[in-house]
Length: 235
Image (cartoon, rainbow, N blue to C red; front, side):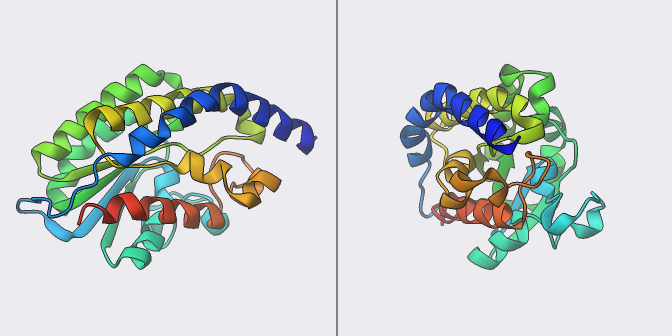
């Protein structure tokens, strides 16, 4: 059963992933900025917003979305260790980009971050990629108005029980990369990092939980490493 699912995943990525990867070089090379004016924000503080993948669900087998775990799971604590920045976790299980747009102003006021990491969302499959991009544009504008630098992330692959989500993920990722290029933003291309990882190429479950959607501990570590470059280029 597993080989057939993996084979189907590769077929879909070869058809739709090419268009996505063709945009990578342009989309991820922009937004590199030293001596950024962060206004009254704290240069030592970064905050991440997103869904359960930002929260860190399934890291080490964690099933709970209780906020008490936010400082110990997912890519945020790993990124904090890599960068020496305080990396706040505002991930919320089940959240869509509509939720991110609704809460970004309050998050920015509460944290006063120099950089905000924005990673939405396979949950937007209910609304479509157009809605995701429109909401991301709103979040970019809100961050810039606050003199916080927005950095976008692409969505990780989906396989197995969630392989039907993969066409949406490929579509929205291509649009995220194009948006980064258009807005001259840095981006963290998690999708590319995952599919290029040798362990993932042997088995996607080297980086993904058994549900085929959320990263496992190794996947969250790779996400932190992928965020690191675009984040630190802002300083």
